[in-house]
Length: 310
Ligand code: ASP
Image (cartoon, rainbow, N blue to C red; front, side, top):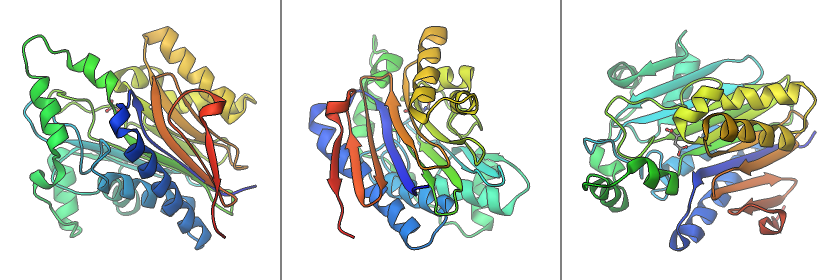
């Protein structure tokens, strides 16, 4: 079994001028997660570290850089799940915190619940001393510009966000064969206030089970929820499919059944991994055995690999 960390920076269409920063963002997050495994950390530690980095990177739609809801506010969703015990934690529609993934982990570790939402999640964060941040520190000029454009008469936010998503996620296997997943998002562009997507819903935005593997998803949340995409892929793996074949089957079903597009990263407990998508693009990176693999486009020949120093 080979320890591995795989990350994604969201499915969609990545404009040319943002391709390089997307790629470098996912590569450094995968490296950071892998460094945690090399230091003896668990797969849960590794996915939280990788996703924290991506939340802190304004290039992605999670934490700083989140898209805005129709009122111009940031409401974020996140989930973590531990494949050893099936423990999970999530937050939905949470505001004013820098790292929702860390709050999701606290929900898992410190409560008997699976998900806290909105003001209740904020109260929980305050009680545990998680610093509150000013909403402005989470909003980028790019996010504000897209929000404004989508308020114009005739704009179609659903169309334009299928163009540019940037949810983030990670899956990992550690040296003990434990798998974990984490996913974090600002959600869909110009969403209704209070809209909760697939990300914090167990089995949709992510799932992890040592008996089959771990998945983190991205794409059109309402479609992902209808087919419980993460759990569907693990079901196919339980039936004997590889991580790659199961990911393709899950994405193909979502496309044919509900016309949904998206992307996934998947691992099995042996360290086999896949990064697959039905959207035009998805930035992703995988670190394993001192090699970093990464890509942005569909097709084998678009995957790059570089050796990392030991
Ligand atoms: N799945 C996310 C949501 O619907 C969006 C995304 O993955 O970009 O909230």
